[in-house]
Image (cartoon, rainbow, N blue to C red; front, side, top):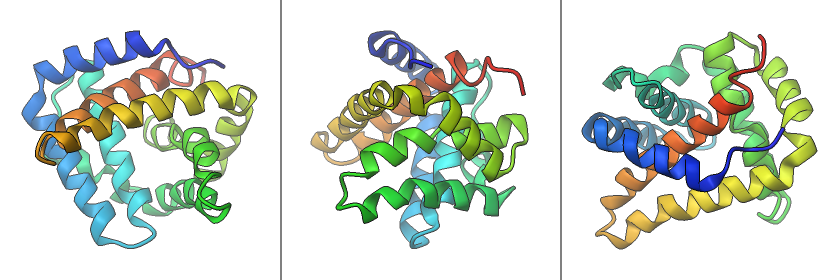
Length: 181
């Protein structure tokens, strides 16, 4: 399963960001704060909030502050998917470019389709792994876009990360989100 075209995803990310800039940036900030404060498991608790806020913005739904904390609704499932993403760091940091794109969408599968972390992991392995290079390039370019915000006095990273979140959600919506539960 291929990711959608990058230009299309970024264009949609920018359009949705313009419509809900402040709520999106606040959700990204709060979820990032969770990731920074809670060592190791913070990724599993914060990343779902970023992705869920992006998904709601993508769908034209109102992004709310509580969306940043959606990872706390099923914490063990999100922590386990987050740990699968972190496993790549153990492989000399290079492996993170395999594990993060491979399992990133797992958070949305847990939220949207009520999957357990095992089901989300297996779905990601089945659907994303066959084209992991495409998903890695997709995640890498979107990550670069998110980091561009650091140039704008560091605060800009919350804007570019919000655009990235919508673009990642678009990748989910166009692929795994369309798949049956």
